[in-house]
Each structure stands twice: as structure tokens, then as C-alpha cells.
Length: 235
Ligand code: PGA
Figure 1: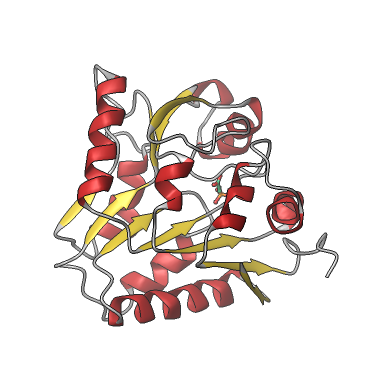
Figure 2 (figure 1 turned 90 degrees about the horizontal axis):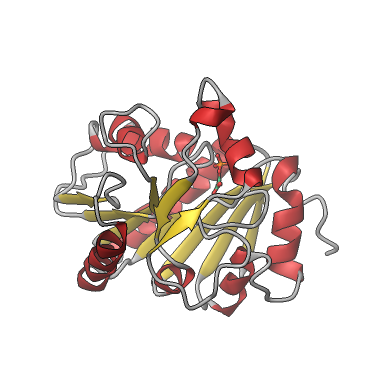
């Protein structure tokens, strides 16, 4: 893993934007995208740039179960607002959180990933070390699956909802094995609340208790993090 320490989320976003530019210049056609507060500034950089995505495909990590794209809390809505409305793609894929058969939807999403191998994946990281919605305990072999969100994730995401009890309890997420198939990965982390997870991911043992630690086995991971998020690293 390569680590780039930045002074601010803005500096990190610019760095990430440079890496995207490089990836697209190198022929990347399919982007793996993420939601949450971490990539927002990066998406701002992208929508204000001259980059063109009309022959590109995006595949998002996850979606809440029960929410469709018209719901402001859905990840489809987030992506439309922060990225796709400004920068149209050839195709945008997110799991369908309203699918009646969620198991079939997971299989279908794996097929989408199979058909559109991800060239360049961006990730945030949860305070508990999750990537996508792969919560602690998720087997490293997992492909797309339905997830019961942990208390920690529900609490962390409650800030986007009026009441904590409105946060969906389930999501459908790309699995760790799916994420590991991406050719290149850029993970961003900002703030002290991510420091434990970053320490575990980089310096800890590889363990399903900290899902992001699987990235130690990936050959092309760049971590962009601020000083607060890297404050617990020993070196
Ligand atoms: P955040 O979430 O970007 O809102 O901090 C990251 C994550 O949970 O993966």
C-alpha cells in the first residue's frame, strides 16, 4: 500500500482527481464509485473539470435495502446529485435496493461486475474498518451480498437522516472479493474517527475483524489520508 498524507480533504480530493486523470489517460473505462462524505470533495473536483465520461461505465459499491432512487437518502440519489447529473456516463450501475428478490439481485450484480471489470475503484473506510458495507466478520471470499448493518454503521450514518431509526438496517453490497478484483484502488480517509481503522488496515494483522485489512493483499492500493486519520500510525 502506498500512503499519501495530505493536509486537508480538499488537498486529498485534488490528489485523487490527479490519479483519476492518470487512470483515464491510461485507458480506464470502468470506475468503481463510493458514497459517503469522504468522496464528496473529490466529486466536486470532477464535476468542475473538463473530464468526459460519456463512454465510461460506473459500478457503485452498495445501496440501502428498501430505498429507491427517488429517496434522498438512497445512494442512487446521492450519485445522481453529486456526479451523474453533471457528468453523464454510458451506464451507471448500483445495486437495486428495492429488488423483491435480494438474493437474485446480488447474483445479478456479480454478473454486472463480471461483465464490467473495474479498472479504478475509490473507497472510503468505516470507523469499524468496513469497506463498501462489508462489516467486520464478513468473509474475505464474499461477493455481492445482503448485509445487516452494524450498530456502529447505523449510528455513523444517522447524521444523514432525521432520526436514527430511519436508517435502513440492511444494505446490498459488493463483497470483499469483488472489491479485490478491481485493478487499482484509491482509498481516502479523513479525520480522527478513522485513525483506528487506518492503523489496523495498514499496520495490523489481516483479519476479517477489520475488513479493510484485506487490502494488504492487493498489489495496487493508494491510501490518501489526512494527518488526523494517520495519527495512530507508528511509522
Ligand atoms: P464516510 O463513510 O465517508 O461518510 O465517512 C465512509 C464509509 O463508511 O465507508
